[in-house]
Image 1 (cartoon, rainbow, N blue to C red):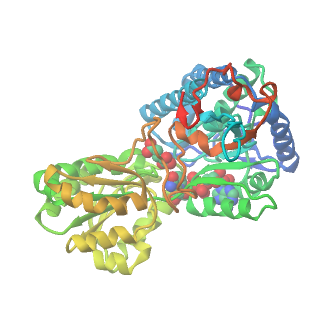
Image 2: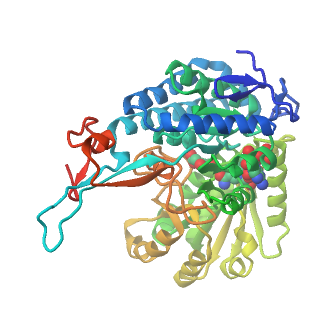
Image 3: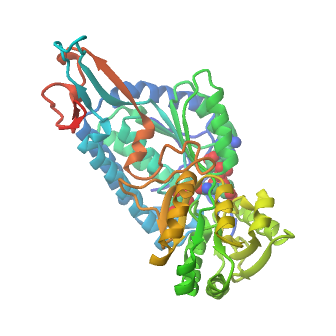
Length: 523
Ligand SMILES: NC(=O)C1=CN([C@@H]2O[C@H](COP(=O)(O)OP(=O)(O)OC[C@H]3O[C@@H](n4cnc5c(N)ncnc54)[C@H](OP(=O)(O)O)[C@@H]3O)[C@@H](O)[C@H]2O)C=CC1
Ligand SMILES: O=C(O)CCC(=O)C(=O)O
């Protein structure tokens, strides 16, 4: 399919006239064709108007029809074939196998949401039947279900050009909830975005849905992205990216005359705690495994292990030995954009130049836009005294914090900001120490994992890919897994509503056959 660089506004395509955006070859920095036309105010207006028009119809689509729509998107993405993989590899510098794997994850995610919609428990249907004879007061008939919140703005992420982008988890969960979506495409992979966007647009048509269910705009975040979040027809936002971008959108959403929720996944350094028994038993092996996680995808994962915590001693030295040896062999890797590469190099330079930080090891030197992995170390007291050492360096760099004892380890954990993940490495003999740490780990992170690393998030019902600020803007939510749908739903209660007027999910005969909690019990 020849790329056109057009905006997708409902069922139409049109070339934006507010400036040109070019994808870049991530490996060389060269401009790629075609030029993508940035959206202007009229395009934004049209996309939001169509989304608002589609909303009342789309939110009441049959569950089966909505599930088929999600499956059709998945199939249409697969039908693009190799062209999608090749364009994505060129625009992002990610290896082909990774892009193919991510495509599998993306379509798997869409199909999982289709199954979630069919199953129906996301509606949270509850019925508390009337008790006319209750004394001293009769009880009213109360019925509750979730409804979609309204049109959702989705910001594609640079580092997961498929799974967290145009048809990624935010879009899939918003559509599953019954919300039309307007995507602000990430300028780092516009060709990939157009191909996937057209697959979604075609699915809307294939399934006979209102054209306003999906639109996609190119343009600068500060202009078109801000305009989208400020538009009164948008009722929620999904975002994955930088802390500065996420917090800017939170401020815009909060300043509206009708404030709306922003679900932004932003900054996390994902502490890895190495307990004594594990270090003694297999410190070197953990060090080697850690480098695998650190360098995966050039370290451009929000779950990247950016902080290692352990009590100083022989065990930690064996970890350092294993990690340093593996890191020395780690090839440099092309980063997503020249800007992200530059930010990474600056971050590494900052750590390298810090008077309280020592460099322990480096990966192989690379070419122009390739990131060289690095491992640093500092003392816990210095880490506590220098809060800037907590700042995320987005890429393959990590900092070891050497603690004097358990109390200092607890103190360091208590000082870190909210995280997506915290990993514990332990043996059975470490259970007592781990038990003492669990309360602070629960307070700090959305996912606590054992003897592993946070990279490579499973898309599953029990997954939490979230965490307290700044990991996300709302630690009560997840952007991965079936629970992600809850971000785009709100409960409505119906009191003494005649059966004929009730939504199907709450009618006495349960015509949708959805799970319901009757008088507090699942029936
Ligand atoms: N923790 C994580 O998961 C991730 C963190 N990052 C961090 O972000 C840095 C830059 O990467 P990038 O992916 O471009 O992330 P950004 O946050 O810069 O961009 C993400 C999206 O938000 C838009 N945007 C950025 N700033 C604003 C703003 N003030 N108002 C409205 N929209 C905005 C961007 O548009 P436009 O590009 O047009 O400005 C883009 O579409 C990385 O170096 C890394 O530090 C990146 C990816 C993931
Ligand atoms: O680790 C993963 O698979 C997902 C990571 C992620 O959400 C991100 O890097 O933005």
